[in-house]
Image 1 (cartoon, rainbow, N blue to C red):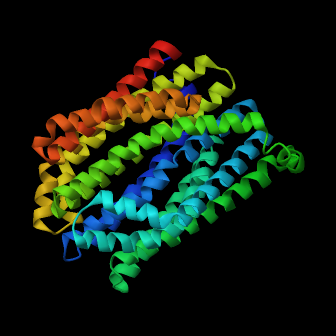
Image 2: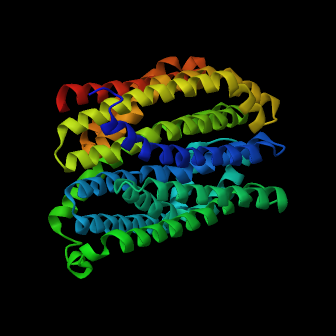
Image 3: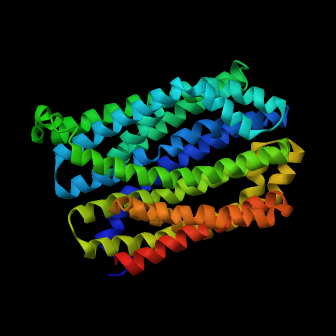
Length: 440
């Protein structure tokens, strides 16, 4: 079948388009946050926001296994037409998410002490960053619970509810950002409180959509009392935690790279970490957009795997590869033509803008270099082969990213971006090689 096969083209876009729209709202909100803070009078506000947000998102991104495992397991139960197991996937995920969130809240003091010690940076970055994290930490139950909710809905191919959850969440965050920072003059704390409130609104909205889905489609098919009796089935739990262990290792490696970029930038100066904060928002804009195709692919791949339909699986992958490349080209052209304007829109600090413009060529190249790893990650999520994702990430992180930075560090911040670009290329190449040689 050709990449334009009706069998995969329309279903992929039915899932991908809502996910692209909803995914892009996340980094766009980050750009608004950055723009609001970037127009405060000092660079250290933007630097403190970058460091503080990284310390919080380190936990949420590290727990990305909650979303990934929920997508794959939910999609495969859909392919097997097993609503009882689908319900259990949701409940197990929510229990684990809340447990992790409460544990981190209890241990927040030593975690913050260690994180800010490793981050370094100026006294102002340390002070304002700590104020920011002291608020944001209380949103963890909602943010981790939302990972499960969004993943489970996507696995059930409910892309439109996912889109509305993220749009509602980020619209709330945007309005509160402007109200708290520009209206009430709360500064960086206003951004933190806006995000905290929006996280809980998003989680509750997600639970509302799930209740509607169950009422309309699966309530009559599930004996909830009998299903809950199997909630702690030892075999299922072993598989669930083994799967999440591998995704956790994979995500930890990715997080180490992102944290290194932020912390190393802080050590190079307030202006460098501030410029990198702008560029990292561009990276998020790229990744969340390309992840729209990957999100659609992971749900469809999981369903095809659950139904044991290898012919459909290959068609889905071929179609997804084509559209991923096309979207990557569009992103590169977009940043080549408009990147400078976006930088000046976000910040009016001359030194920060000059540095961000200096490193902009890395952002222009990255969509074409990185698009493959985003898609193949989605494919392996659907296949529930987290061990392959884990191995690829370990090789890319410790065999490429850190050695490349070490040998290039004399080039300063360029070394960070060169190492990151190589890291993304190796991820895509290793995953693509394994899929086409070992899976298909």
